[in-house]
Image (cartoon, rainbow, N blue to C red):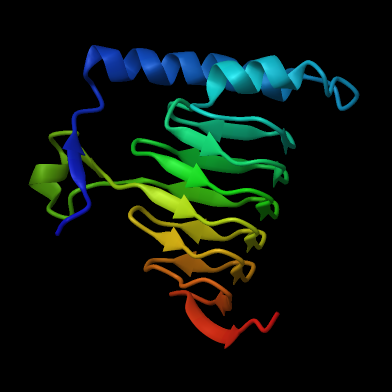
Length: 178
């Protein structure tokens, strides 16, 4: 089964959703470090689900409404989430700086790509995961509960729960014993 769906990003509803998200991200990124209480209302407007989260500046996303954050989510500086499809992040998940999630991709054929269409597939990150700095997670990927993704990794395929995985492409290095 192909998890990818085709979308036209130029549809007015999608363009309006991106504009809304960009404005909210600008508001969020403009807050001073001591304005922690001012973040929550912006999070609630921006994300599909959020309870307790802290996101360092600068944060960028396409829509925000497709991002569902679990309890105690933390993202370090310069996080980018391209949420053309749902991005579900579990409880107690931590992102290092410069983590990027791409729930979107484009056609490989240049003629097809020139039409502007894109393909989207959900990304899921389980509870208690740690995503190292500079990691990139591609469309359609699921990372299992309790796993650690090494800094600089490019995650192209599902990662099971309870492992340390790293590299480009990201591969399992060891199983975590608890």
